[in-house]
Length: 472
Length: 153
Image (cartoon, rainbow over all chains, first blue to last red; front, top):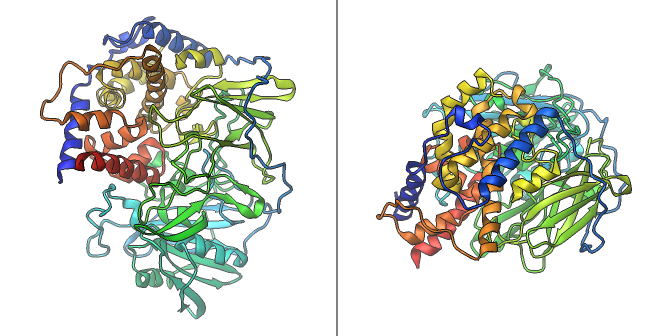
């Protein structure tokens, strides 16, 4: 452990050890219930008001619908594209599913999912990539040292990452094979290989954060086997040789959407990979609560494969790949394709939230984007300096039960520090300017990032007054 | 009204949650943040369908801490004053390191707290907070970079 680690540990332990005694249950439920610790004058009143109003609103299902008109002095900085007519990706079906009917030796089959038609997602991250119908499996190595060597720690100062040495298998349409290989590996130059008599390609990861990839076509579909850069290509080839048709996959009921008036303050949105939601096999305690989407986001190899490579470069510190989620072919990009000034070697940029911009390259706008219910025609975003941005919503045309908005956010920079601008409130306007929802957006999250279906708590009730109170 | 089941869940996890809250907003506000988070979670329509309630409560505390901290920052700016240090400090801790860590955003603090105090790896943190592993790694790396720069000066 180095000196910096020691210092951080000391401070973190200080945080924990100075924690007060948790409020008792009685104290929690009392009308003035809150911790006994002192706080700035006035804050107790705000806190109590917020909690009481929030509780009442949530219990009673109160929905506050205001008819406030929009502010005519807003800054118009929208980059939202016009409602586009998009290629029909819905309804296509893949010829078969390829993968592992049972987990191969040394691995557990952690989860699998099918996506027969339109994408669905939660949050502002949409690793749609170029993909149509998909069947995918995620495997992780068993904790058997002889079978698989797990690195003790990463060398770049980040935390050890169990997902970092996992493997994924993706079945896509042949027309999508090249794009998926590119997305996973960061580039597409590879060597020819033969997998069970089929011509294929093996592509080494462009950077340490990209995937090693083996891919081929078989039985009318393309199979892409991906593993992180530390997973040897030879091992991926060995796994690829074990891939077989998967005749049956358990298909669960779709989860959500859960948009309703009660949750419209933050657009509760956890949509599984419809219509076949995920199923998980052998996931241990804790993981059982996750939806397939949530795991997909966490599982490195599939995450890469589902993205779109924007650029890969030799930067000052080495190679790095810039990815984006969204589909350029659909005239939509739901992630800012920008390069942080502080991009580090081998660290692809995965901005998973838009409400607070990352540090972006000079001249590159940041983007605030997110979801809105279908009845919302326009979204107003209020920044911490009082500036407002306004953008129309639009339909991606993929059958999603939500609309999308995106707006350039000038001068949103850095992260969630006190000095950086951030979004403090989002208002959604319906026909005639009626406010359909109004509430604070948790820093770093889009209004659609409530993830109710994946069990994230609501950030603000529907009542805008209580939101305002909570905001202080 | 909190049900017996919810009360049992709260009492089971209250200690770890208040420590987590202290890591996010400091000891002075930890109790309040925990109270608000728990009440908000218990009264959420989604609460009854939650299967991993511990993780849900962790995320609820994180969300509440974000709102709480933003409000506190606005109060501080409005009042043009700085937050004073707590009364009890570990004098072995470098003040500049403490200040730098205090200045981190809430999510980064959560990542560091769960890493150093709870000994969770990136996957465990991602699962608990329902964020991607890459986000955990990015937050951790960014925090380390900032601190490293400061530490090397």
